[in-house]
Length: 126
Image (tube, rainbow, N blue to C red; front, side, top):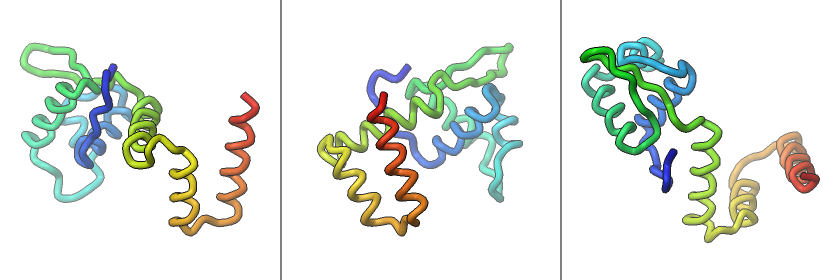
């Protein structure tokens, strides 16, 4: 598990999204799930996967010289840590400031605003 949040780059996050979906994968499996063309080089993905391992978000199981990688943090855990880090660092720990920023900067529909109100109401019931 991550001791402190390691913010992932866009490429790292794309790789993690594939690993979260597949649960475990070899580099070739990640490339097979890639949805953008041109495909990145095998070595690029392999290097980024090793960086993700150093960041403590994935581990591997070795089969000789081949490695199968798997996430050790769920997507939901990462989202929570990322959001907490964002609130702490960007909004001085104020969730109100975050919500105010989202509500004032996005073109939210009445339905989306109602969903946000319902989420807030239900979280207060816990």
